[in-house]
Length: 98
Image 1: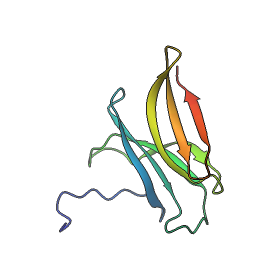
Image 2: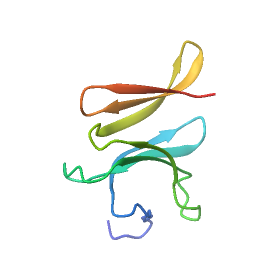
Image 3: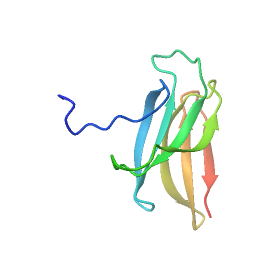
């Protein structure tokens, strides 16, 4: 890629761990954190509109560097919206949404 059309996000030097599209909100949710297994920072969960003209991604959560979040997806659980976060250490978290 020659860089045309690419969007540079201000992630403060963090690596991008996961980028998922949330079809309900129309936004992207992404995890940032240490790159190359160098767990030297906390992981942040961000929300972003996907537009080059939009503000920087908004932080909506933070996780310990020991958890190593790998992905997130929206789901329905007992009739309610939730987000499922999976971690590289063999665990998960369910975030119940309103």
